[in-house]
Amino acid sequence: MVKGLKNEKIRLTIENFRGIKKGSLEFGKVNILIGGNNSGKTTILESLFLLPNPFRPVPYIARGIGRLNALRVLSLIHSTLGSEANIFLFHYYKGGKAAITFQKDTKAEVSLQFIAKNNIIDILLKDKREYYLGYIHKEAPSQKVEDYLLGVRPSGEPFPLPLRIRTVEYCSSTGEAVFFHPLLLDFICQYFSVQWVTLRASGMTSMVAQKISEAVGADFNDLLLEPFIGGSQTIYFRDKMGRGVRFGDVGSGTQVFVALALLYEHIKPKMLLIDDIESHMNPSLLTYLASWLADTVKDTNLFVTTHSLEAAKILAGVLEDYNPRIKLLELRKGVLKDKDLTLEELERLEKAGIDVRQRGIFL
Amino acid sequence: MRLRILSPPAWRFTRSVTKWQSKLKIPLAPPERINKLILVGNGAQDGVVYLILAHKYNGKYSIGITTTAETREGAIPHIPTIIRELNIEKLVFSLDQEIDELANLKTLLEEKMKTYAIIPNLKEEQSRLYVYDCTHSQRQFELIVAVNGLDDPSYTQHTIEDHLLSFFKEMTNNNEILVETLNRVQGNPKEAWNLLRNHHEEVYQNLLQKGINELERFFPQQVESIKRLKSN
Image 1 (tube, chains in turn orange, blue):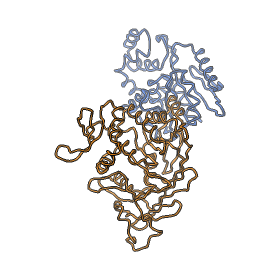
Image 2: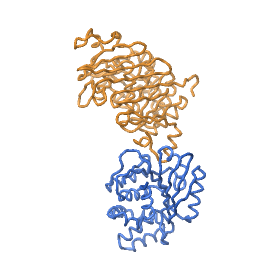
Image 3: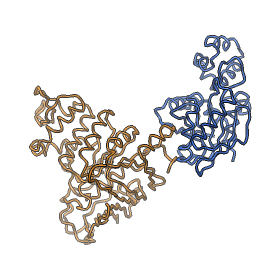
Image 4: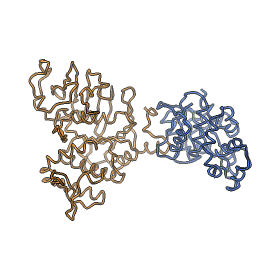
């Protein structure tokens, strides 16, 4: 165990939120979520991502939209054929009330609530006090942050609670949460381009370029933001000979590693949420990523999802000092069930010919 | 009866059973809880045979099937994990006799069970089929050991392929191909079956045309084990 590491306990309860009708799980500092498709893994990450405040601006910029808030990131990920509507937050789009409740150790409980009424969804956050964060429309995408600093709701009704004026804040009891998925790479690069001066000045770009070089056997020594053919700006890896390779032209695993590392170093979130961590990752690069996480996440709660038992074993092994929890998940008629497995149990079951990710055999 | 394959997807056993399930259009069980299981001690070929037999044994009852990282008696140390984690009440353990004497093999299996804290209480014995009431820790389960092989002296060892080759002989109504093939491999049924790989699909398709009673002539201990697995 890492020296000075507490045995952290997080209790997360979800009601009527996306695919989960009901569920309450206990997590630790490092959590590896496994399970079949539609077992609620991503929904757990999404609930944790929204929890600190769905309206806070997050490090993603979408072309044509601009800086995104946490809610809009999820709305865009789930939009199908361009359809966006905030009713996607509720189990089977039924509306009513959805709640995400979080308690870390003995700290006060934090509860985020979405309450649908007529055509709007009120969003409330309760930590030590209860705040009204704002409203969104059921049938439209979530607006920009400033749209919520309104005096009254469209119906003319007053806000149900005092407005939390600084909607850009995150809840201090949860800290900031960063959600990472390879689908978000373009949004992240757009954000980096705006933050480039800060990233370069902090030395992060050269540090991350050198790290990825060790991992993939390249000789990059920095990342640059410079014009490409045609004049538009792009991010380059620069090697020791001074040559540049565009970010999008290196392997996808390399892009994922670099984006994740830069994002983490820039934001230093209290919760790092990585969906499908094995995406684009060769196992040797994943091992390197796990080793970077082991050095990095001392002050962070880590939640990763994976479909790969190989990935789960790599992470659990490399992060062993953090007492990682391998959590097998299953959704049955919307009810979330879980089972904790140790690395030894996972390996013993595999040798016994049991693939733990199969639905309905354990839970 | 429908099978649910529980082994990891990348294992050869899973790939092979899935390939034949797809080719033969045999439906698999839905992802629901199972409490009965076929544990295959010798790999993919047994898996395909049980896939066909279970399909022919009517009903929508779901049964799990898997194999372990170790073969034959090497699978026994994994039985406690399987019983405990999956709440299995009845287990068929299928393995090849190979060159062992049956009595010696039975003793070997029972000794191995005891080593891993499984207390076997033999309640019934037929030709190459042993039925035990077992206790492990506080759990009780029925273990049906089906040993593959036939009393046919043309095979130098006894495996699931004995059964497939005897069916092939009757299906083709031509003993010469089989005799010639066995001569090429010094009577080894596994190697003979491998040499006949161009006929595998034909054999499986023919097996699917037969009724369960007729299949029992060629696979007596395997069919009996399935019947017992189904019974309460």
